[in-house]
Length: 114
Image 1 (cartoon, rainbow, N blue to C red):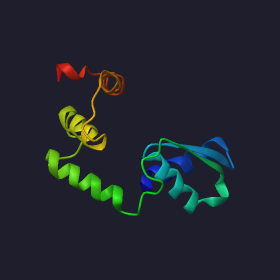
Image 2: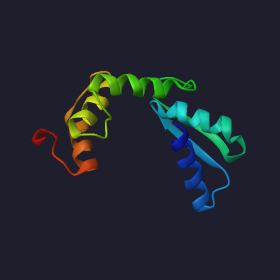
Image 3: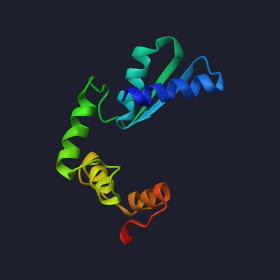
């Protein structure tokens, strides 16, 4: 979470953006909320789209990531199978052709060939 918030701030700084309207989808709603709490002067407004929860409690995402890592026996970045397993857990077991296309586009791999 801290790295993602720093990425938003760094991106804004690199573009010379003093204030921004931030849009958060799903768990991104918690991220933009935390960003606004830490950098209130940099936020013009917040927009929430299908937010799962309105606030990600400090440390909660790390605990969830840790539980997923224990379940998949490693990091999502260790292999394509572990990344897909992590994605399925974050999405509560949901899978679809669109998710497979996203995987292929993101990693340049066909998930059915892995």
